[in-house]
Image (cartoon, helix red, strand yellow):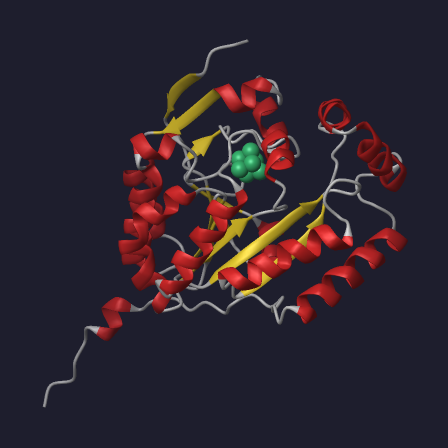
Length: 301
Ligand code: SF4
């Protein structure tokens, strides 16, 4: 077994423009780290480690990079983008993975963004986000920020094998509740839904009921995409967890990256039915830029 290695990284750019991000409601992505200790088997970001001449398996979880120059670069780049831009924090790594406890780069980014006023979404699986409630709450209350907590199952042993470094499901639901109580708009991302493993009606029913009870404002749900690069690694792990379920997955996907239309329709109907049953919206909360400096200008009598 290889040892974890953490390296500093001087990033040339902190905000990455994402034309395709528009589909998901953002213009720029921001990732304080490269690689992710959480080690989700299905993670689409694994293959980004191959651009660093590292592998998408254990290297992604153990060869981690910390962007030490994040704060000065981000402060500069925020002055060069329009206030109407939306930024997504955590698209190829979890910004609250354990590294954040020590390095606090996400915290630094948050403080800069609270001041700049840009709209922000944060996607995480980690209760460590609660540490920053003092900054998140005012941003959430003025609708500058929404948080997406990812949770694909309530089955703790299954999750432990699919996402070995993440917090247990009930702990993540508690984070949803705490964010909600602090006035932060919060969604649960039920993604990826893994055919054969987490797509059964009763499985999703229990999950969405718990999501409703935790107070989520809305839900996003989407099936797994299996990229060609990830396929061998994923098959090996999923077959090791549950060979019968992996066989169902194989039948549903064949050699495709996405399941065929009949399966997607069936899943969509299931999610529609269950979100309706539990009164859960599928509509993201609308965010607004925060024009702090404008609000500080008072007319003279
Ligand atoms: S937490 Fe997110 S970025 Fe990290 S391994 Fe899991 S899916 Fe990938």
